[in-house]
Every structure is written in structure tokens, then in C-alpha cells.
Length: 211
Image (cartoon, rainbow, N blue to C red; front, side, top):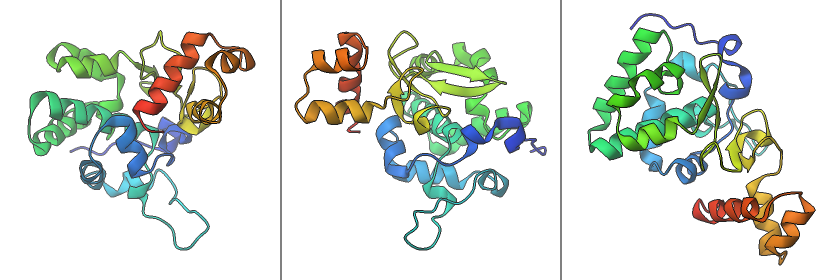
């Protein structure tokens, strides 16, 4: 494979820095934790260098494998959809990914906008995910898991990339916490200037993904 030009300057620290744990990535994408770890381990060493090690202040640094970036999350989401829909071996999905990576001069080919040109060749669930993504400078920049007409987004520029109300920093987790504490859907809608259907959609997503 030719040398790639993936750098923080090219991709942006906001979508290459670690933001998601393995368990969290599993809940958001539905991909099993062991498959996530295997996928990450097949990235070349220079990809891990794009983001600093994750620290929690309680001891030694975690390995980079415990801290996924937004681009890695998107790649795992798409890889998982391809594998599940085609019932194919993990290795075949990786080989497809790496062939595109060589062609497009990036290690993040599944998060590259060029993947849209392959949409007709990909399984329907993958096309559905691609329709949920926004792109900036050629790479995924936001994921709207309920569709672009839905109220939610995982935006690495807002709310730490966590599921949140689109274009705001109001996390789904916070709405779920208020609801669990006894606040009604109508009260939450009024307090946060949201439509009731937006609050309901956020809560359904929160319980579905066990945030």
C-alpha cells in the first residue's frame, strides 16, 4: 500500500482524537467489542499516533485501542454493516477497506466521501448509514443516527461527539437523566425549547442504545 497523507492537519484533531470507549462504540454501532478491537489492531502504527493516549488520572495511560476517534467509530459502523449484511469474513471486509485506502491515499476509506460512489454496490444497510453522514473536507464530520431529518447527531465539534440534539450541546444522556428523575416529556420540551417529538425521539434512542 502506498504511503498515506493522513495527518491531524489534514483530518482535524476534532475527529481524530479519542472520544469513545470500546463499550460505548459497541452500544452505538452494534458491533461486538472483540470485532472492534480486531479492527483497530489492523490500523498501521501511524494511525494511533494521530491521537494522544487516553488518561483518566488514575494510573498509567490506556492504550490507544481503548479510545476511538470519530473517524474510527464511523469506519467500525460501516464495516459492521457490510459484514452483517453480506455475512462475509472479517478479512474480506478489511481487504476491501484497504484496497480503497490505497486508491484514495487514506487509511480512513470507509469514512471518506468517495465511498458514496460505491453506494450502489454496497448492501442496503450501508447505504442507509451513508445517507446519515455529513462530510467536511472529504471525510465524515457528523453522524445523524435517526436520519438527517431527525433531531439527533453525533458531532465531534459539539458535546464531545456524544449523541446530542442536533446543532446543540444538549446530550441525549442528560435528557434521559431528567426523564428518569421524573420530568415529563412535555416539561422537557418546554424547558429546552424542543418539540415533544424531538424529546420522544431522543429518549427512545437513549433507551435503545442504553446510554
